[in-house]
Image 1 (tube, one colour):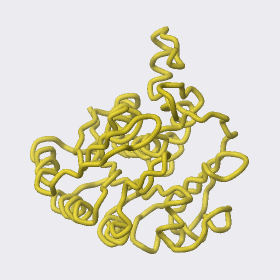
Image 2 (image 1 turned 30 degrees about the vertical axis):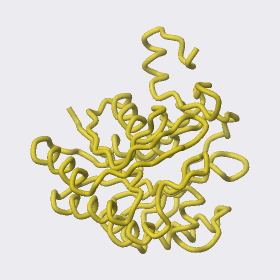
Image 3 (image 1 turned 45 degrees about the horizontal axis):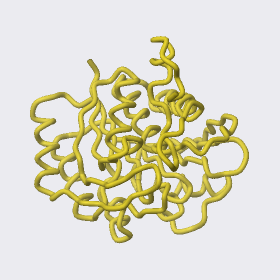
Length: 270
């Protein structure tokens, strides 16, 4: 059984964070393990509170997994603070982590800040150099590189700048662009765009978490990096296509749509 570890925050509503990552791993045939960095009080309408875990228990969670179980890939999501970022990066180096996918989670869809401003530099300094893939959206990319990212030309410029910070590959997610949903893959030499028709839905809670954990699942299954990204793109497209209303706000994507369909279960959360 292939395995993957998610290091991220907990979403009490189940649509994003650790919960989305574990659902994604399971849907893609990978055994998921988790290290919780922070607990959020969260629902489909927003984040009402965040409680960071102390650095010792975060490091101990990582050690407990690595001391016992082979880890095929790691997805890193919400880290909240510079201190947690440094601890996580140090632990991954110590344990020789491979196939590291970093989703630089900064702001929730509701607008709540999930990574403190002063922690962005720690993310760049300590995690990017050990990352195999970094997956910022347009807003995150702009904060990382310090200039607006709002079209294909600036996406390519941002990808070059982020690649220079250390990761092996960069995926700039263009979901906020008008028109087709377009993501940019950059390997340091060539650009490749992964594009599909835009899906008109508001139910997109957890899409970034789901996409990055799907990439990690592909790497855990020993796919080449571009193939893992392409498979993740197809998976998240299906999940968004069948996102459903749950609660009063932004509903989740459907992580298990294909499995539910095969089992004869109504697929769209009805």
